[in-house]
Amino acid sequence: MKGIVVAGTRSGCGKTSVALGLMAALRRRGLRVAPFKCGPDFIDPAHHARAAGRASHNLDGWMCGRTGVEELFARSAQSCDVAVVEGVMGLFDGFSGRDGTGSTAETAAWLGLPVLLVADAQSMARSVAAMAHGYLSFDPALRFAGIVLNRVGSAGHRELLAEALADAAAPLLGMLGRDEALRLPERHLGLVLPGPGEDDEAHARLAGWVEQGVDLDRLLAALPDLSPPPPGEDVPVAARTRLAVARDQAFCFYYEENLRLLRAAGAELAFFSPIADRRLPEGTRGIYLGGGYPELSAYDLSNNAALRREIRRFAEDGGPVYAECGGFMYLMDSLHDRQGLTCKMAGLFPFAARMEGRFTGLGYREVETTADSLLGPAGTRARGHEFHYSGIPEEAYAAAGLYRVADRKGPRERPEGFAAHRTVASYIHLHFGSNPLLARHLVEACAAPGRT
Image (cartoon, rainbow, N blue to C red):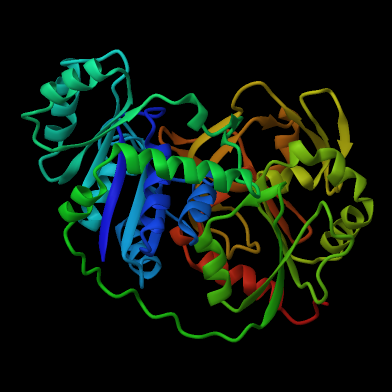
């Protein structure tokens, strides 16, 4: 097996386009590609899965620690030919400005993977050599497979860039031309999620762009063979409870590791659509409402009154419900979108979510529960991420308090974590890999005697 980390000099330099094009191009060659994403992002992995034909997994050093990252990589890269890891932000950006915690560089070093550095060369000539030198020499422990320059212009521009990097510490493996037609559409929170047909064509165009501009043979030859340690063996567990998991265009943000850990704890995952399905799956013993874009489907969610009422009754009758971000919004009384439309939601929490024009929550979070809950006894700790444009009235937080929360600056004063009956809800996406007991406790709550 071989592996590569596709890292950028900064956000917006083209690393996602290069990573997707590389995954699709290697797959065209008949190679089995295992895709990964550094950091907490949900949207890029969805594109990875379409380009590589295989589920993409998040490798996050701050949320999961070194052992968690190494085990997840080893397990998910099994039986593949090439692992392609897309970085997050710039190569050395992470949890803080003081060290590399949570950065792409940290993950590359832990896994022993060489880095393919992607840089935006627009309006640059010899200065690109200075930029490259800084990245290549900043951390002597990192290995670099090469450099790829993006947004390269004329033949003269290419000649100048090649001259500038002739003596660089890593080879120049490609120059990719500017082509606005290759840009993937974006909206708030990031890229538009992949849909049928059109995105396959977009990924095919990116594959051709990479094949034309990058020396793939030289890149593959530069990658050392990897022998990752075998992952810990999962003890087979018979399904002992049925967990209904919302999954459609409104609810699509789930860490693959969360779903794996739930299955490993004995959950049978039954996926359903709060937009299209009129009933919960037969035999539901618990509900997992993940994040996504409920604001883009608010009218359809509101119009499915039968399911909204059933989910509320399920929660009020003591059924275990775990909701994050968009799922939390769905459990509120209503949702106000950017067009001024107010749409009725499930009504379990007596306040409304309102879409704003900028982030209302962004960053890593560490939580500790203050009371017993679906997630475990009081004092249960976990790590996650918050990333949303919606907000709730400040007075609504008076009903919160299940979580004590800290961010990179320390403890946060505002309470978080909402509980009602046996429901736990929050804007924070928790990564169960940060504490695998979360999955076990949630499954045990669903499987408890007396639930129907």
